[in-house]
Amino acid sequence: MPNLENELKELIVKALDLEDITPAEIDSDEPLFVEGLGLDSIDGLELGVAIRKKYKIKVQGSKEEIRAIFRTVRSLARYLERQEPER
Image (cartoon, rainbow, N blue to C red; front, side, top):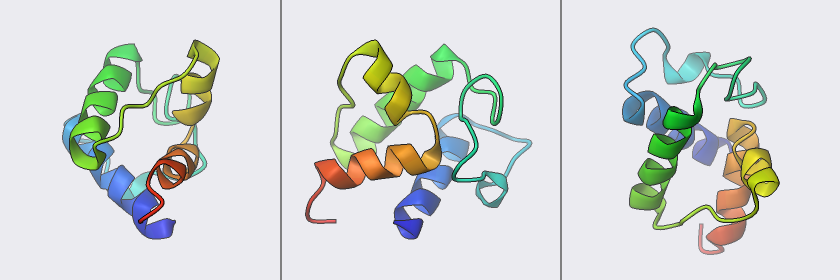
């Protein structure tokens, strides 16, 4: 999973064009939205599109489930691993 977490950190920085942070500076357990990394809902949509393009997975669920999936890099990596058994 650490490799997937690193891939996701790189994807976040690249897809969201974050200029003031490197993938290495993103803590896998820090919140992605509001506090922590400080992403907003538009960032979330862009990140969802980037994940769909890269991993061919559409993140789906109730609003609460989506929030839980996108809570941290680690929670997102766990979700993707469950969707991609061949990884």
